[in-house]
Image (tube, rainbow, N blue to C red; front, side):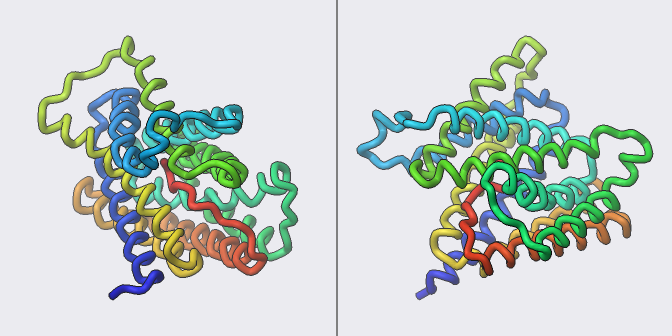
Length: 294
C-alpha cells in the first residue's frame, strides 16, 4: 500500500510525463495554424476537467462571485499559452523548457507589488542568479534580435500573473472552476482565428491534435492531485525532469543538440527557482497548485 507521499510523487511523475508529451505534440503540430491547435488544447482539455465537477454542481458550475479575477486569470493564461505554443513550434525544445523555468523569478518580483509580500536577500539573490541564467540561454536571440526567444519570457510573465491570481482565487474558488473557465476561454477565443485559415486534419492528425488537449488537461489534474496528497517540498523538484525529457526527445526526433550555454543557463535558472521555492517553504507561504503552462 502506497503512502500519501509516494502517491503524490507518482502523480507528479505522471504530470511531468504528460506535459512532456503535450510539448512534443505541440512542436509536431507546426503544420497546423496556432489558433487551430489552441482550439484542440481548450476543447479537448475540458474532458479531464469535467470529471472533477461535483455532480450537484453540474447545472450551476459557472456561478462565481469573482468574475473579474477569473477574466484576468483567463486573459493572462491565454497570453502565456499562445507564447509557449509558438515558442515550442519554432525554438529548440530544451531552450523553451529551460526558459519556462524562469516563471518563479517573475512571480517573486510581482508578488511584492500585487501581494505586498516581503522578499528577503536570499530570494533577491535567486532572482539575480536566475536572470543571469536567462540571459545566457537567450543570448543568440538577443544578439540576432530574434523575437522568438522572448516568447518563453512572455509565457513566464503571463504565468506569474496567473499564479498570483490563483493564489487569490483559491481562497474561495475550487481549482476545477478556475481551470474550466480557462479551457472554455481558450476554445472560444481560438474560434476567432477560423477566417485566417484552418486546415482540415486527417483522422490520424485529428487524434494527435485532440491528445494535446487531453494531455494538457490531464497533466494539470495530476499536478493538483500530487500537491493535495504530498508535501509540496518533496514532489515539486521532480518537475525538472521535463528538461531531461526535452533534451532526449529533441535530439531523437528533431536532432536538436543543446549547447553548453543552454545547459549552463538552465542550471542557473533551476538553481534560482529551487532557492525561491525553499525560502517559500521556510516562510510557510502558500504555494498554489497552479499549472506549468496550462
